[in-house]
Length: 151
Image (cartoon, rainbow, N blue to C red; front, side):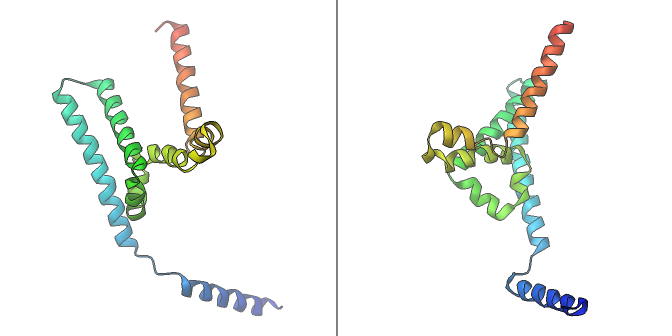
């Protein structure tokens, strides 16, 4: 096959494949992601405001809001709601911390039939495992350094 006929063949193939691919609605997709991500942030701000009224502040407040959002994301994943939200919202549901909770809980639910160790325990850290390992390792290293220095 000559160079020109190969280019023509590739172009025809790409046109053929694109004929089956529905057109992407970029504005609609971005708008949904923005709205859902913003709504998740509003929920976090609501938790923060309520906890501030109860007297929390600083690191305790930030940690509690994060834990509540992670719990909410995991609960919605377990109920099957978060997957439906993710189908419509895309990155708007993946980027906030609730998306991280979803990435840990989804494989655990999906592979629970394979058993506790080889199913849930092994598969739930497939996506989030490296993040957790490096985060825990870095936290332990910093804690050890602070302990050694005596801070």
